Image (cartoon, rainbow, N blue to C red):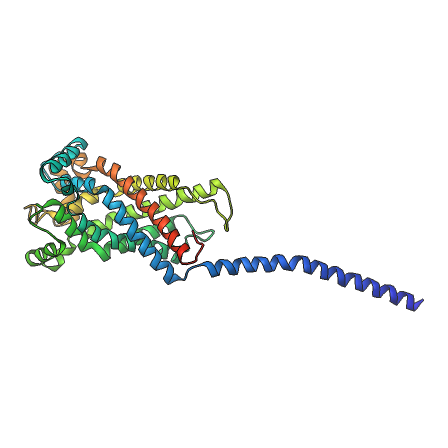
Length: 345
């Protein structure tokens, strides 16, 4: 009887062991497979230095293409922004562009674009690269992170880009409002400003620029990334295989981002241009401070015709430029990641 019981107990233990082994064999491949997927994703990711380099390259290319497309509109806007006596109308801006084309030729519409590219390529490169790094620092992509962190990351990125490239912005504004024969290249602009106004004059207008870029860059990046995320969620998919936004959706998100960003910071753009070009336009030290410039423009030109002069042009060129820049940046970055063996998107 004892042997019989022992035999039954042995069979029961053997069944339990086999069952556990069977369960283990069924579950382990899933766990191993998950670990393999995670390891593969990590292996496919670029290093942080690789991400920095690809972001710099993509951002520079994107900014250069976007600014070249809208260069004539930008030059027209700067002319009216810095002119106290000319009332702005969109048809006046088009008429001014036509006059330039007839008297000086087609390429005159892109005068100063070399200076623009010399500034916008490094600025855009630093801007987009900084945004990716600030997103990582502020953990923007982590679950539970407040949405305003994305705005903060964008504002910090824009401020970083402006601080590092501002003298090029001033030189570009000076070239845009002076006759073509006066300054043939950036070096002449820098030398002239340094001799006549001193080294710190290269940073004249930096304060309104920084005050303006905080809402502009923050709003633009926040809006674009938020709308892009909404497009991904609407299409479905999961974290490993998301349904990415189409080119048209990216362009639309960039256009909305540019529209909101430009409107949020426009009066400070007027202040920046007046402070940058006052000396070259014979205004001397009339525009020395942000508050003083705002008051001067308000008293002589009013709010709509002063603080918001040229806004209608910006509402056209801003969305075009931002949508092109953000979309091109996305696709160039994706292409560079693919080229270097990463499957990030």
